[in-house]
Amino acid sequence: MQLEFIKLFKRGFTYIGFVAILVIVLIIQVGMFVEGKKLLDFLIKSLSDVFLFEGELINVYTVSYIILNSLWIHVPILVAIVAGDMLSGEAARGTFRLLLTRPVSRAKLLTAKYITAQIYTFLLVSFLMLMSLGVGLLFFDTGDMIVLMNTINILESDDVLWRFAAAFLFGTLGMWVVSGLTFLFSASSGNSLVPVISGMSILIVFTIMSNFSIGVFDLIKPFLFTTYLSGWQLFFDDPVSWNLILKSGFILSAHITVFYFLALWIFYRKDIQS
Amino acid sequence: MRKVLEVNNLRKSFGTFCAVDGISFSVNEGDIYGFLGPNGSGKSTSIRIVLGLMKADAGEVRLFGEQLTNNRARLLGRIGALIERPDFYNYLSAFENLRLLQSYVGLSYDANAIMNSLEMVGLAERAQSKVRTFSQGMKQRLGIAQALIHNPELVILDEPVNGLDPQGIKDMRNLLLKLNADQGITFIVSSHILREMELIANRMVVISKGKVLVEGNVKELISAGKQHVTIIAEPAGIAFELLQASYPGSSFTMNKLLEIESHLLPSETAVVNRLLVDAGIAVQQLNVRNSLEDYFLQLT
Image (cartoon, rainbow over the protein chains, first blue to last red):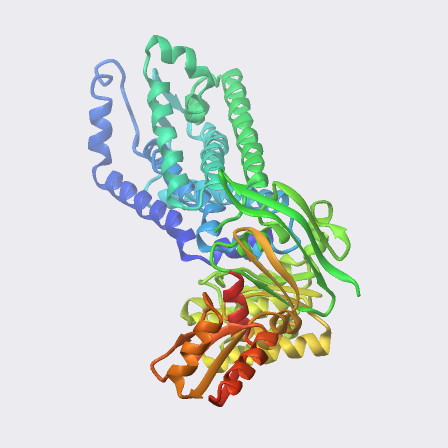
């Protein structure tokens, strides 16, 4: 696995995701710093007639929550670019011939690559957390957090950090599914683009199916991993729906496991022709 | 003599196309074994099966007396290989590539071994250069270095002189002969440069359309086959007509230099010479060429 890490982090390509997150988060934070109050005033305009809001509503927690909501669309693409290249990249470069003529079992090689892809995903999501919360402190103060979901939740500032940590961990689980899916396509492809496009296509189609309330889709929804990807938001609910979180976590974990074994099965049977 | 590789009745199809159709051959310890065949004959597929990159539909591969399928990882530790193009991690240096591949074999980091391998192929001065800056010939030499990095007993090289200049080809030939003589490394070399194969291989197999055409000692096979014969006779026209009349349907041709050419068995060459001399024709030169190329072309 150490060798896979060396290969991964010696490539400039690997850092694209980190740079993209850095740029996007900074843009959002600067934007929120400059125009955030107007935006929040607009969002809570209708509530202002009923509730009285006091203090600094634009704070690092609220901004981080907004960043997370917007970035969960982009992070899967960044994760897929690297995970989709893990096996197909070796095939495209022709380096499988070098690796698989060495005394390395295919199962070991694939497992090392799968774990490397998942650690990369974890690092990317952690970087997102560090950027949104850590760098956010340079622009904003802490304070109570307003969460607009189906209801409006106001979370006290000393009750927020653990929720962010848990949400990021759950978010990592969701991204591991995306990473696992593109890795699965990577096992059967000789071209790095195919797994990324295939993975993203499935993600988009499943997300649409998960969000449409049509009879047929409602039957399928419980089986789609995309239904559970936004489970990280549940940690900002009050009270937290632990049963729903556990169920979502279990289903996502099952997908991660199934994708791994499917990739292993495909890779084990694969003829190296490149 | 111990057999390093035994291939028995190997078969592999891709859909309805049969790439390898029941080939069998064996390589002895210490051989430089030529693996010959025209493009698409099944050479690369066979080599990939031997190295476990592809799975055979049927047949058996035994390396060092053991079945490949049950002992793949362990047996591959005793083999070095360069298959088709020498592809590397272009964003790493030559040294880093070899270090990485050294680790994949399970060896601990040994900078001296890496530098020795690079030295052997004349790349020591470019050890720290990124592979993306290498020419095709340099990549080819690095390919040889990676095949030798773990002191293998058997080295399989697929087109090892591709992209090399004449001096590079000569150096490669000398390197293989030296390693074979000094360290007893067995080589299986697939190449379409038949002149090179003739200079280095002691045994060979020729395959075509997925089947073995012939296997054996290179010198014996070439000498037993038809020779390319060039006859310079005076008068050339009469000599040519006589030969055509005496051997109807034969392959005698006359080139622009009025030289008569044909492919003949050694016994036939002597008879042709006597025929011309008895007819009063002055045979000024009778050149016989025994080449692997001629033999290969006759076979395939």
